[in-house]
Length: 351
Image (tube, rainbow, N blue to C red; front, side, top):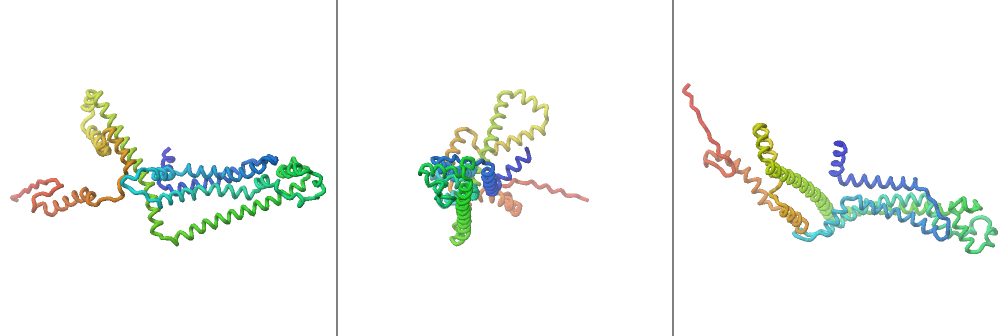
């Protein structure tokens, strides 16, 4: 369990690498699913086209939606889009960058499925067999006496080798449609690669500062949400621990005092230290209504992204400066604020 926990924490800390790995796994899964999938064309004029095109379109749509579902940034994007304005403005360029990043990762698995399907050609043969000019394949005298309906039924049976009598027509027509399908597949791969190349090549031509800004704040939104969740979990844990301790103190005070008297001083000091640390983690929020108000304010009115240095320096530099001034000017000024007084004792020896 510890190894799995460490692996999960590593994946959480490396969100971008984790999502790239998920996209790669989905791409391999799409190719594996198609290879394991048993293609079975209905060989009926009414259903061939729907089945062949549906196999080419519906699974990529499912993989695309699955890519959005598995991406954790979708909830971050939706939350940032629908949140009230509050004290923090919304940057549409950041939201657009997050959406484009999610979309690019989600398109990998559908692109692999479409490429494999077009290279295989079975769905193309099933969908477009009824649109062939049958006079190009074999002896035309065999089907001149056929009606138009019978001819369409014969063409619909081309994908099914067990249903058609003339195998030469089936093989020739199948090879012809598969060549067209593979040509479409290579064209699709070329277009996708060219589009990816244009995105990579054109991006540095625009303002790099704007790109860095959107990338920075998109990472900030994701990290802020994770740290807020971790802080809420830590606060909830400390709140529950203090609440349970107070409950047992109120219910079994005499028994607890009896155990304290027997356990000794060191154990009580350790427990007091634990209590103090839990109290500090509460950050002054000790009531349910107060916590609900904090959570509501975080959602409705997030703090502005402008840290005031004066308030930060009061907490840091007040104590540090006091210690420095106390060390340097302490004997002259007597004492300094923020530092404890020290008593000095001098002993003289007559020896």
